[in-house]
Image (cartoon, rainbow, N blue to C red; front, side, top):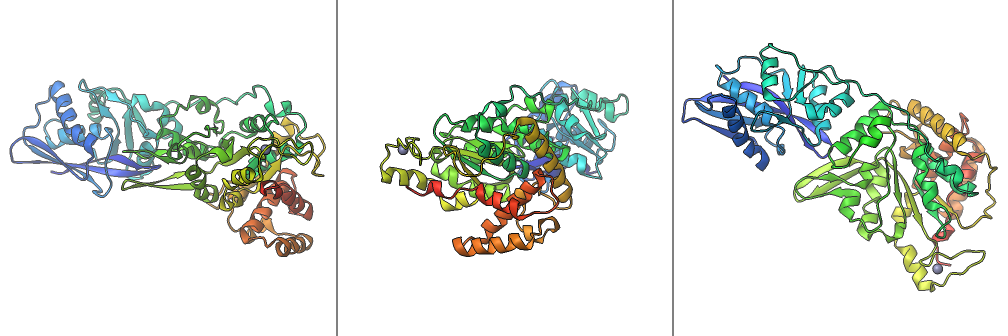
Length: 508
Ligand SMILES: [Zn+2]
């Protein structure tokens, strides 16, 4: 008789169900494995035999073939142990007589029968929970937190294989996962209000965060670029449940600690140093594909200080994720996709020495040096950044009244998030105005005649691309949202235009 049971595999960010079949054959006793098992899975055979023998089972007494399907997915990791051990025991039918075909198992076996937690468990559990044919998913106790995040009645936790056997024989029960208690994140020191002046930069941060638009802050050292960016995470509302699961899935497949925002559902804020390698920034790795900083900032903020100083390949690698919110990785025959729908806040000096200014210019850089510095940011990268603010110049004629304080901004962002959640509820993968590719097709994005005419004039004057026009309208939509206006008007389009100063990256 063929025994069937289930476990799961993960490729990058997405999980896939894996069926485990075992059959006992009349031949010399041994266990054979087929179905593209990786090295660690092949070793599972030894762990399973040692563990079961240690528990007093006399196995194998026949030739047992274990097949993992679909065969085209490479199975890596030690979490198949539990499912394989139970399939083997069941194939030797006198040892375990129960139906395993509606149960999924995850867990590495220690030789004494303890179940060890699985790294990257969240997508693995999720795929089993989401499958309607699977009624129970048994996971190691060490993965209780991932089980709790998914809030499913199907999940049970076990500490040892013996507990699992008692459960399968209906001699004992297994615990479910407790609900997680979330707390509201406390605002620690209100950094946003500590930045004096800089009302345009504050406004740009408000718009960037509210609509998920990318922002470049340019300014002399010490002008408050880092400070204003580090305030971002406190300005954002907590993750909704759907976003929280996505973020946790990314973190689950990395080695990064998650305690801080598991309790509060606070959005991630990542600020890697400019010496970071491109694979650490974008994702990659050797045997396993790891998410990079851009994915760890998914649904949150990625702050890149000294932006032009990052490695060229790292900066250029941002093109795809800045545009689509996803990064496709191909490394040594492996491919995977990781989500990266973050808001980029990049910061840079106006020139290498940092002192270039239209007022009080004390710059000591040669024209060549300045040109070289600015060339580090290519046009395709700058095209993807809809908001650019020069923090060194105060006389832009765009100064806003000082009502731009922390509480007002936070409330406006929260309101804009609610509006956008409602607007995009039928558009999967779109969470904010900055992520809309064809805004003209959407009802809320209609412009009045004045705005249309104004845009036509600017398009002609500057030869603006369709991408730039779309970007201007998307940002105008966010401005209307934070202002609690139903329609986009010319004021919003004008402010959207004013929040991207073109000139600073032209050598002067
Ligand atoms: Zn300079």
